[in-house]
Length: 364
Image (cartoon, rainbow, N blue to C red):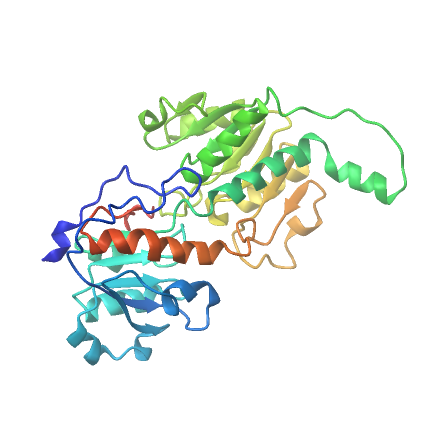
């Protein structure tokens, strides 16, 4: 099978600030065709680079649809598509149905960084013979900016500042510096490292938690790296003035942060979550915010989205709340599609290593 000539190199990940665009040896001979089907909405403007743009030489778009019924499976079997681009939020079931119906597919690319919207036991099984990649590295910088803004929000006590402005109250008060404070990062992947880079510029100490600590042992932006066991996470919470969660949602990370961590958090610690809401015991977090065990929380993700009107989080003055949009720049999804078209498709055509390989079983 042609599939065997494209291998996964786990060191190859895209970062829009650091990676060299077009670094795939353009002069190398194209060794295969890329026949793409798009499990996406035809009306999604962010997919214009794929649906309406000029594709790399050797590439063609065969079909677009959001359900299996919208694809002519009989005709597609004749054309033998080998690439499946997926962006529709309700793709979990149709993705595995398409993979089952079209065994010629060799590569699945998710337009998002998180793949929890498509993961399943069936996809894990297909992943044994089908490469899966994502758009990691295209969303990190804006989330890092948000994380630092959330740190400053509580360090300078913006809730008080805004109230004083509303009350026309000229009352001076002391603020905290970020310089010298400790930022703990749970999930030191692309988002975590982008945040550490900014925190380093502020003069913060960075303590990170990751599954493979050795991978960051020489990272210039990270002072200390712990493993991903519970004792390490407890240690991180007890040492950190600000704790950032940037983990993906997987069976292993769901419910990982509990009352135990909030109970042993450092005094006046603030919690920031840009990962996924279900990673955190939301009720325990709310209780910690109400009792003062946590000074504050900056939350872009929640256990249930949209956040129900009945949630206490809406009413808490020490919560900075955003509707899961802190990576939503005007061009962020189009840039993710452009990464697929301009970076990974040319690599596939040339039989080169694809960027951003993910493991369906792990969820990242």
